[in-house]
Length: 279
Image 1: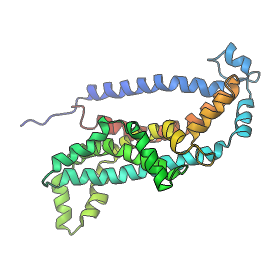
Image 2 (image 1 turned 135 degrees about the vertical axis):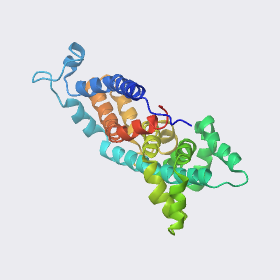
Image 3 (image 1 turned 45 degrees about the horizontal axis):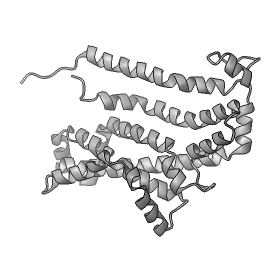
Image 4 (image 1 turned 30 degrees about the horizontal axis):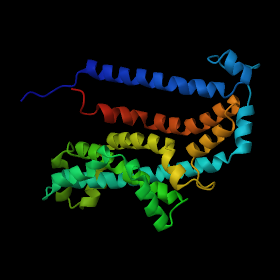
């Protein structure tokens, strides 16, 4: 059989589309951040202009830092997001490795069962989840959010990672077994490094919904000590809906962390999306 070669033009087209989409998606975010450093008059007079000596103002950020515990909200969101992603990637990769590597009775059925979560939104079980958390004494704790987000992210992680792990050379894994490597060492030191772009893709796909989620923090962790940045921002915006300096500053502080994480993982994300998809 003839080897299928990658078409450089197709790869270039995919990268161009992703870059254009990123620029279009980031434009409103850039406008919000720029206007957060302006006076209220400058926001309405020249919304697309850069801040200058006359329009520059930090009044919005001063209001935000005085009225809300944004550093505490940020810490809660960071803990929930990082720990949830760690468990999603760890358990998802382990389950995907088992499904792709080992042939056992019920393998296909198990894969379909684990993928059901992609089709059925976890929010449909909100009442049952709340009852479980109340019975477990986990209401108003970050643990409740971590458990929910881990459960909701695993189906997609297993679905994506299992497809990538099937492409890992069987000869490489057999060579590791001949050299005396355990299955755990093969998984952590041979397979995971080769599917790193896929891991980054799964991380980004789960990171943004977790960071921006308002539903479960409002239901499971609405206490002042456990509020996430998104929930704290929404409460703040509701109080200062007419103070555009404060509103835009609050939105900027909520957006910037996830933007930075997206930029860090963007290269691996593009590699994960285009890997094996363009010939």
